[in-house]
Amino acid sequence: MRSALRGERDADVPCDGCTACCTSSQFVHIGPDETDTLAHIPAELLFPAPRLPRGHVLMGYDERGHCPMLVDGRCSIYEHRPRTCRTYDCRVFAAAGIEPDDDDKVLIRDRVRRWRFTFAGEADRAEQAAIAARAAATAGTAGTAGTPATNATGRAVAAVSDQAEAAPRGAEPPATPPSSSSTAPST
Ligand code: SF4
Image 1 (tube, rainbow, N blue to C red):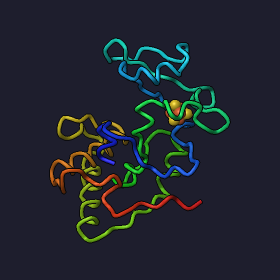
Image 2 (image 1 turned 90 degrees about the vertical axis):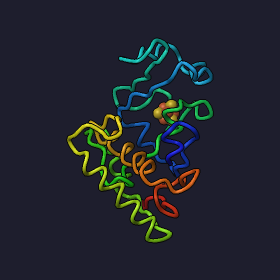
Image 3 (image 1 turned 180 degrees about the vertical axis):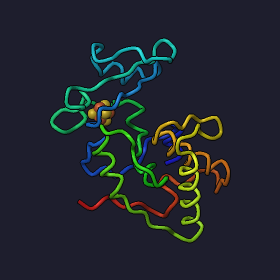
Image 4 (image 1 turned 90 degrees about the horizontal axis):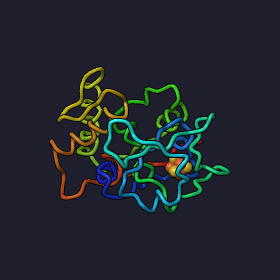
């Protein structure tokens, strides 16, 4: 999870057909280096990203809050999807013990509520508790370690990342939350 949050690898979320993050009125950031992605998205769907250097763009959503690249319930450019999509991991909210705070993200919230983690041992359980405590401590405040945490997403990402910096557990943190595994939500 942490390496995905850093943009170093794709997230390994077992989405199991869930498209909540594609249907929750989210702007998708695409960087100027993502030439393959940009080649697969019509230019008219993109606009300059505010407060970012030239070349950074955003893709919006339709009147239903759906990404325009979502066709028949599937990503039509999956192999070429933006880095934002490749690295998105809704389990970060569950790991931090908080929920998306945007009314447009009800589907993501519902998904987050159904995640269940299993812990390999007490150390993993304690790490998750430490992450949740970090997230709770940033409610309504600026983030820690210089990371803006003014919304739930920022707070959750900061809590997971800051805990890793404070208590590194090896060269490469586990790809899943601080547990031995996470299980797909029951439906
Ligand atoms: S580009 Fe694909 S993965 Fe990303 S939000 Fe759109 S449909 Fe979902």
